[in-house]
Image 1: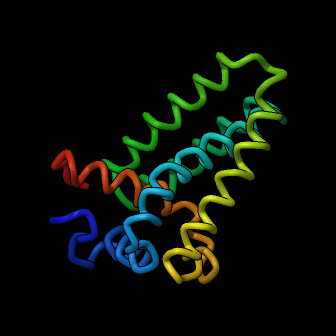
Image 2 (image 1 turned 90 degrees about the horizontal axis):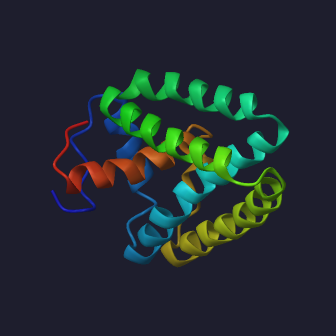
Length: 151
């Protein structure tokens, strides 16, 4: 499979990733998303962390329930990634978490919309809010395919 090829549809995760991929075919848009999507996840966790660390942990765990319902291998990858992000937030000086998260969150979203302008297609989540949670799986799925990890 090349980087644009998704597994054949059948399972819900395959269908969701294939649908998400339809608006992420331009190589420049893909690179922007591969950078910005993980950054957005980190900064969203950071915004929640700034309110209270337990809120960030609860949001991470809630998303894991959804991810495990779609694909255990992708959920484990997201669990590792989220865990590393939460650890980094824990290690950051508390006064830095909120301003860093807000500023980088805005910059990353601007990047996403620039990518979609280049792509010429609107973001998938405009049609279905679930795609806000599928974006990270799309990036992780690309990595899994490159590493020949089944999901």
